[in-house]
Image (cartoon, rainbow, N blue to C red; front, side, top):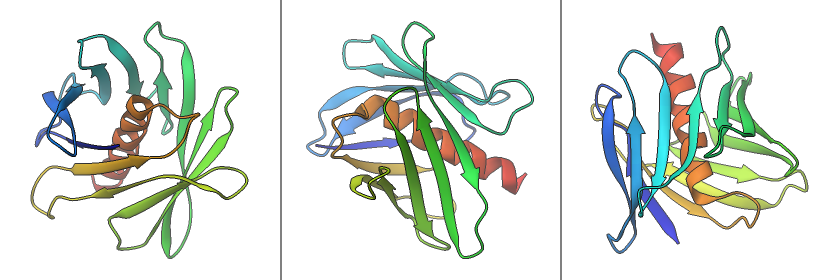
Amino acid sequence: MKLMFRDRFFSSGETEIFSESQKLLGTLDMRSAFTSTVDVYDQTGAIRCSGRFPMLSNKWEVTGPHGESLGLLRERMTLFSKKFTYETDGRGEYDITSEAFSKEYEIYDTQERLVAKFEQTSSWFESGAYCLDNQSSRLDDYELVAVIMGMHEIQQRHHH
């Protein structure tokens, strides 16, 4: 199933997460325009995960509903592409890659199998909108929403 979600223009407040058929699947709460913190809720309103930058870090930490660590996202330096690594606690390491000017990203496991892909569907002047297609049995849809928002926040830091 594909999930559709978007960032907010000033990165604060709530926005919806929808299925391809426009069914509401949850909400994304960017808590403040001044801090990079995201909470992801399912359709019942239960928190599924959160994402944030730990103090004095450029890595994005994803935690579960009780604050337990799910994984850590970091950017990797490359010349002609965008590359990130998401290291999970006990579920493997995943590479997120995209060509330099592309808005399409692919997520691969350590066996180089494609486990998910997503694309930024918004234009240059609007806030980020994404379409996620997750085929992984080890990575939760809501967790990947938090990872994608972390990737977006890391890229935003480079532009400011």
